[in-house]
Image (cartoon, rainbow, N blue to C red; front, side, top):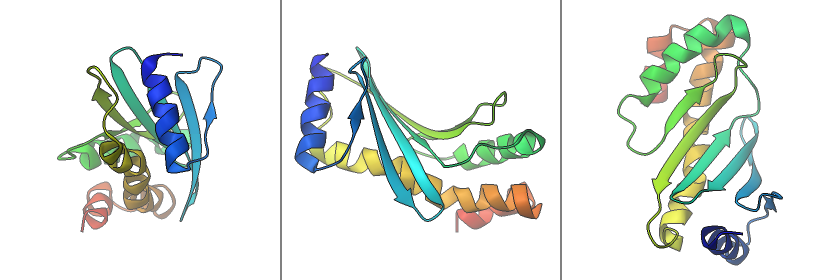
Length: 148
């Protein structure tokens, strides 16, 4: 286990968050309830990078991937920390935050902000994505409504 993984494990234990640590030991998985289902969060600690991935409950079906890719592009414009990503091959949608690591993991205060950020962004934009998929909402209008 890397030093960063040990530090992250200690932080999660101290925070009282329930998580699973993979056999690779540098991958942590958590689940959080949200208004739209359960968001899965993966935290990967590499040699020089901390990545936090938040996955909403459902994948985007093929027929709507182009519209959601357009929506993701509009949503990402101007975001200061993190971005949405869409795998156009399988429809996986996620919010990714990446933080370069120096000599140690970010402080507890920074992690307290970063860990829930992906979930907050999914909660903010998922209704827009769903309105595009199920309500044939105009992409520009849907994203604009999410940002009000």
